[in-house]
Structure formats: structure tokens, C-alpha cells
Amino acid sequence: MHHVNLEGVRVAVLATDGFEQVELTVPVDALEEHGAEVEIVSLKPGRIRGVNHLFPGRKVRVDRTINTAVADDYDAVLIPGGLMNPDLLRQDDGMLDFVREADAAGKPIAVICHGPWLLVSAELVPGRRLTSWPGIVDDVRNAGGIWTDEPVVRDGNWVSSRHPGDLPHFVPAMLELFATHTGRGHAVRRERHRGRRLPRVPTPDLPLGRMLMGGALAAGVAWLLTQRNRQQPMEYVEVYDIDPEDAVPAAEAATDEVVFAGGDGAAYEAGYTPPNNVA
Image 1 (cartoon, rainbow, N blue to C red):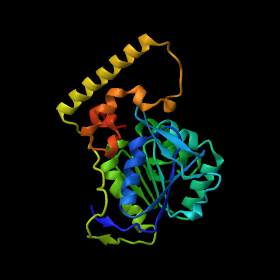
Image 2: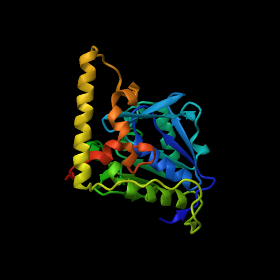
Image 3: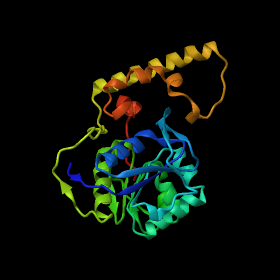
Image 4: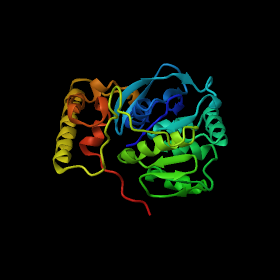
């Protein structure tokens, strides 16, 4: 990948509990690798919990709440997905105003998976070409958007992708968009990376061996949870408050071989299958 220069570029990541972990951590790692200053802007202070598809993920620290964040203070916006995350964000007037002001100023916006829900509720989608998680196609179209089933879609100051399997396309498209829309031009740099390497992301096509390993892992996790439930009464908790070490002990032990930095996205590498194309 060309090494764009994002030094001095401030990026607001709009997220709250229930964000899809790899859709935040992988783009953020890439942005910081290329010199950008990234801040997590959320609905509450402290830490927010991510998810790995159906499994609870790790927490990330919030840098600023939406009550104190000003769109003019940032050069670009990143909206990760996750079923719960954008649904909570779009119910907050401050978040809606933030993306409206950013878009009106022509700031670049990168959005993935369920993230377009926030843009739909902000009434920014009419006439715009974008993609998303296939499950919200009707929401995008009913809001006046032009939905396209492609790994990455660029429309003016927007770039969008469908799901975590598109991250190999989404990340470079996001970097290029942020470079060209923040006064940096195509500042392509051939210098060598310093510090940690850009994390690799998986492609949707998984080898048979990994798929079988994923099935065995899932079966092991299910057996462990069954044994645990036999020893203590069932209780209902919010999924994003579950400690990952308690919920999926086997998954943590199997993350050494996955390609996401720090074990992110183990569920995807182990057996993630992108949804079928939507007509």
C-alpha cells in the first residue's frame, strides 16, 4: 500500500457500547500508523465495550464525549458498525448534529457495516451512493440512498464497506479519502514504516482447514458454557458487560494464530462467512 501522510490529521471515531471490534481497531491502527491523531468520541465517558460478532469483545477508552466534541475540531470521521453501536448513536441528537456539521463542511466520512444507520437518521443519505451490511439495505433505499453491493464504494467525501470481510478494501480506501480531503493531497511516501506494522486483515475466502478449526472451536466453547451453566443458575446480563475471559475462555486461547493484531476478530478468522449478495 502507498504510505499516505496523515500527520496532523485529527479523526473522530464515533462509537459506543456494541461496536464491532475489528471495524474500529483495524482502521484505527492503520490511521495511527500513518500519523493521524485519533479520538474516540462516545455517548459517555470511561470505557466502551466492543463485540466480535456474537461474542463480547474488549473495551476501549473514550477520549471525549459528544457533549464536548465539536465537528470543526476534526478533519475526518470514522463510523464503525456493530448492530447495537450505530442504533444507539442515531438516537442521540448530539451525534446527529455532529455528522451533519461534518458532512456540510465536506469532511471525509468513512463508514462500514451498520454504520450508515447514523447517516440515515441524520437525513444525509438521499441521492448518495453507498454500501452497508445487507440487512439494512431497505433502510438505505427507503431513505433515498443508492445502495450498491460492492466491497467498497466511494461517493464524494464518503467511503463505505459492507462488513469485516471488506476491511482489506476499506482500510486503504479510507486512508486515501482522508489524505485527499484534508489538504494532504496524494502525499505518497515511500519511506519505511516506523514502529508497529499495519495489521493484516483476512479475506472472505477461508481455507478448509481454518473452517474446520473454527467449527471445533465453536463446539468447544459451547461445551464449556454448558458445563458452566450446570454449575450455576442462569442469569440475564447485557452482552457487552460480559467479561470475555469468562464468556469464551477457549476463544482467548486460540487467538495466537489469527491475523488481527491482538487477537481481534477471532470469530471471523475462525469461521466468518459474509452474507449472500442482495439483489
